[in-house]
Length: 297
Image 1 (spheres, rainbow, N blue to C red):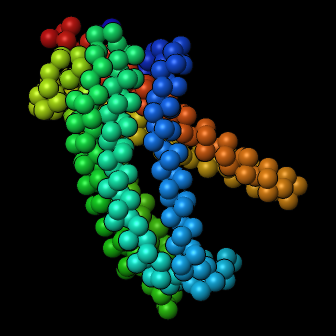
Image 2: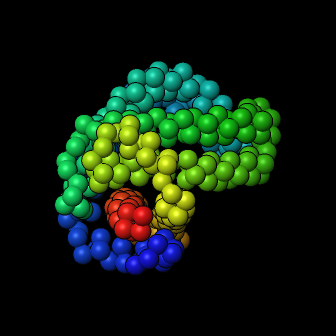
Image 3: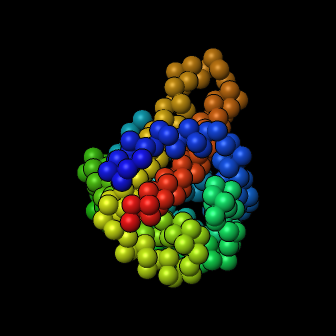
């Protein structure tokens, strides 16, 4: 296995390695769901509280014109202005709490997964949590930039009381989302590989970040390539899950609402498990490329 091999050419082998170790994927799924399920329950409870304070009837949500997307967009914008203050109050405390919970859960969970993948890696949850805090802060910054950009596009194209330009808005959302997706792939790889460097080279979190920026070009290009490929895979999984969810819609009258709920639940479960599987595969790729890079140095 030489350093000249392209990252994408080696992914099939790493996929097989991960498939032969379902316990590692199960561990990845477990730590994510231990955090995610309570968070979803809290979000559902807060949504119910907001809907009790501001009913759907009073905001016009129950009379949305589903046959006219332009009119519906204006109605949704009008309803959002009434919900926005309540949502802002909830998000002001929920986002920090969720971010802190994610940092701790991902730090411990990621350290457990890496320790199972490579015997040389020690279980260092505190150090991995510190790296996850920096990673989450960068992700939050990118998401904030994306949200501000999409809000700018919405303000210019969707307004209450006038006809909305949904075509222009959709074009801006697609353009901005793809742009920030590429930006994230280009800027996140040093922090994504930092836990691997920290555990394999037995250094501090801050030293691992410093080393991740100083890896040689041949290693850096492979890390960026893997990051881009995994991002594209995530998008493909989303599209595939949506296709699975929408495929039975023409037969919804025959299947009934309960069957559709099962289909949607199955599609969501497929996406979550498949996404976790590819996250483990990305870590395996980082580890293997580190070994290749070290042996060739």
